[in-house]
Amino acid sequence: MSTEDNNHQEQITRLVFPWKLSIFPVLELIFFISALWVSSSFLSLLLIVIAGILLSFSIHIFFHECVHFRDEYSTSIHILYSLLLGLPFDGYRIHHFNHHTHSNSLKDFSTTWYVTNNEKKPFSACRYTFGWLRQLTIAVSEPEPFDKTMGNVTQIKSRIGPQKIAIIILYMALALISIKAFLLYFALTYFGWAFSALHNYGQHPPNENEPVCTYANKTYNCFFFNNGLHWEHHQKPGLSWKQLTADDNSTRINYPHLINPCMETIMDKT
Image (cartoon, rainbow, N blue to C red; front, top):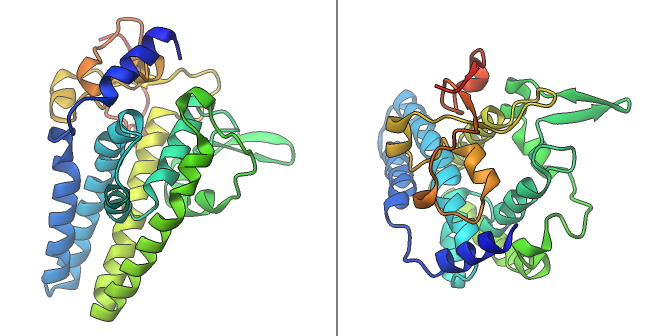
């Protein structure tokens, strides 16, 4: 990260809470509660899938912004974020900073590649999406998983323990309330991170020498807070979503990242 980017980072860290972006976790929570209250099993599942899609956008928009530009939160905020994510917030922070450091190489925890018999092979979209939990459980052996300019990994790791405990307590509380509540929270977490994995697959498809791609549609980026400007974000991670603008040098795709893995990738500059 350049000196200019570091200056931007320091400036953005002092910005007010990103209230606009919080629409996604708020809607996620509303749909999750709605799934708890309805009596129809089919409707509960439909609502929880919608809540999962909203969680994926919470991850890629709201929590993503918080990870980059807010290092100092109170313990209660860290725990609240973790409960909304279904996973430790600071675990996501390490995961995402690692991604910026290694950008879909084999050292990237979210890489869309795997190695078998000493040969590098691409994950299929289906295997990558629904197998995210297995990928998550693979032990991280590197003591410094990302560029040190992005943060102190020891300090970040120290906050993960209490966040894990809070999630376990929530699961226990939900189980005491009802098995339905317990299962729906697990489904929310699973589907939310599955959709998030699919989104990441669209941002970093496992094609040799393929650059990070941007979906530059103005309407989409208006409603989704410049989430489509992924190439621009990787070039300047020190900029907030408000400061990102489509760059003429970016490689473009014709579909949003979340659905792009399911369709033919078409690159152009339109």
